[in-house]
Picture 1 (cartoon, rainbow, N blue to C red):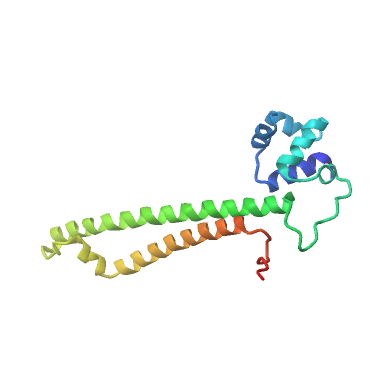
Picture 2: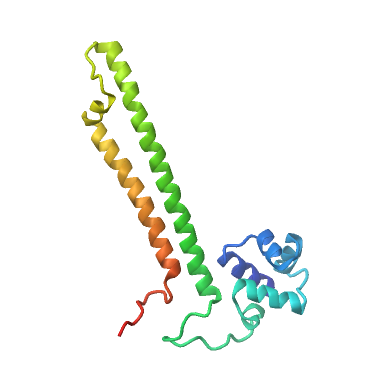
Length: 178
């Protein structure tokens, strides 16, 4: 694997675009593109910046033998694995709150639909409930409201779970408490 391929792999795993990486290190997107296609190589100072931003060692980025991995009990020191874990948690957080917001919007639309049902019922049957909320108890509205509330709860649970995952120190292990 070439330097450019490794750089592209690490950048993507970190969830960064070429433009975002360029901004973080003070270079252009075109420079990052040239490095990834092996048309050029960064100077030593830029390589140090790349390693710091991407959380990998120069040995890993240059394809040399990787330094020894941390021991099982050692705290995580960043690196590619940590970056991928945090990036996945951020995406889950975004998906969670977007789901919850969509659920809230649907719930509002459902409440307004009760008014529409009330007006349609008045025009068609002349037998209508004066309070639009009484239509909420008529089938299938309880099921619709229940599903919408479940969507909101799932979105909130996903967002909260991802925040907890981002704060967790060691993936897959709970901290030892004496």
